[in-house]
Image (cartoon, rainbow, N blue to C red):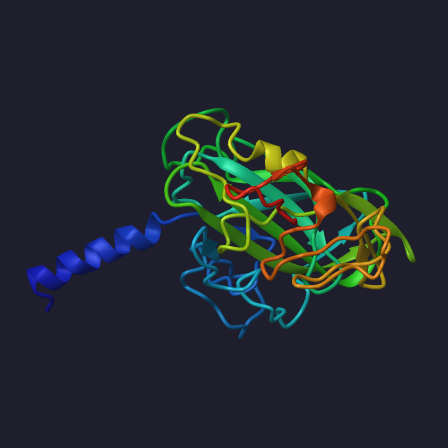
Length: 281
């Protein structure tokens, strides 16, 4: 028989676990303990609602794990409409910015196919934790490439509370254009450790972070699992230098562009951090 103290602790833990953050439930995300239609026997994370990082540190890899589910959880057709659902009884942190994206290279890079900005989980500006919207219909682009190993991602930059980044991913197959490609905005990763931009707590200003979202570069993905940013002949790695000398771009160890081309009298001609260094998305 539980003591009153133990019972109180259990009640508190139960309330915290029920009312903590948000998580995707459909399509079944990797590590989900919440969907009986998820592949049986796959590993689960009972803290799936937790963020993968904060503005000060990344606590988990993108997608929470780089391990795929034992089988694809959905097969989608390019041009069709799919529904993404979220677990109820979460803390919606007054909304924020949600991005829905696809990866064709195993989760290394993502192209955005839908944004729900400012008021994600709500019908408008509202301060509170009780979500009003728990599902979104997404029209898949008709020219998506085919793939048997695509990764669908939901990410969320919360409006209120600690500066966090949330991400769940699902392994899906896509019936689309064989040999095709798709170009869209590259996923913004923010509040995910010191090497990423910080979107400040909104405090009623729902334009917070919109400048970063509007400046996302375009990226092209294809069914061969490669991706590229239009206008760039090569990918530049953090700490390295482009081998396309017409770009003359240099990057520090955090992935910031420190090229003279991008700095004008100590000020950037692009989105910058507090130290005047341009962000790389």
